[in-house]
Amino acid sequence: MRLNPMKTKLAAGESVYGMMVFEFLSPGLPRIVSNAGCDFILYDLEHSGFTIEDMKTQFALCAGLGLVPIARPPGKAYNITARMLDVGSFGLLYQMVGSAEEARELVSWTRYPPKGVRGAIFGGAHDDYTGGEMAEKAEAAMDRTLVAALIETKDGLENIDEIMAVDGIDVAHLGHADLSLSLGIPGQFDHPDLQRGIDKIVEAAAKHGKAAGAMAPTLEWGQDLMQRGYRMMSYNHDMGLLGEALSSGIQALKG
Image 1 (cartoon, rainbow, N blue to C red):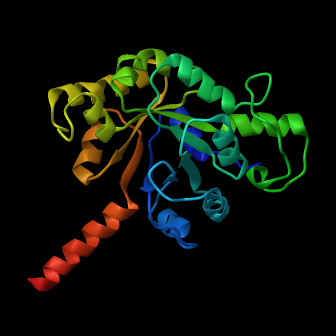
Image 2: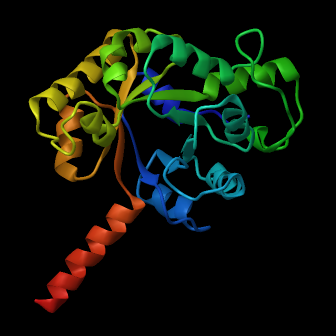
């Protein structure tokens, strides 16, 4: 079974880089992302029209590239988690995690008994249709699965220390847009309350030996967050990158 180099790097205190995808899927997308130097690609199913079949194809395309596929599922439910993992996701980014109790339940969905409740299928997409000893493959699957909690609500921010203390939560991921809404300061990303939240997230992650992650819409955002200790960095997303690059070029041609 393939390993998860992204999880290994984060556990060793290193940084990893990738991008988020909301809109554009093609057979060439994982290769383009990999060629750009990314460690991971994060597919968002919460805010897109992507299907489980779309993801199964994309995850397979990542397989030969060393590119780690991560999914933000369309909802928080066991059956969604199980399907995402069984078709080949190496990890889940769960939205609006608000408490340690919720975090423990989410982790349990990604673990086989007796550590959790994940149902078993082997010799399928997630283990590359290979044979092998069940116990070893189950342990390898749990070891490679990355679990990230999106901190994007007031409750999540208030409970961040307890959430990051949960065994099996690997990353505290900033959700800056939703967090600004939850704090009553929509879109005010420079507001002191949001800035304090950004620091609180990375401090809690570091305290518990975990990583902090974020999606940076600009290079300046990303550099600032990394200087503050964030180590799982998505540089923008597919719609933003295409729109900004195209707009810049068209405006330049127009003079």
